[in-house]
Image 1 (cartoon, helix red, strand yellow):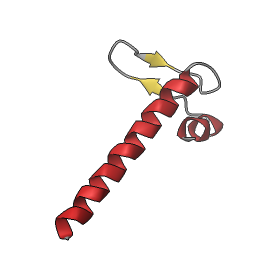
Image 2 (tube, one colour):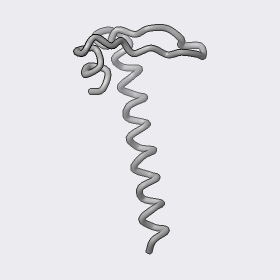
Image 3 (cartoon, helix red, strand yellow):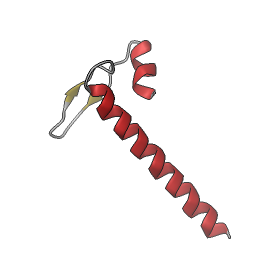
Length: 57
């Protein structure tokens, strides 16, 4: 998981703006939040790749 990798290297995930602004400990409640964001980003990237392939067909 990305948040675990960042935390292992001394980096703490942080939301810079919005109602959830703040720093999050990936071993606590922030882990679920960043896992959801990571999953959503992966789904968006897959969708963009599908559109790109479909456009070439």
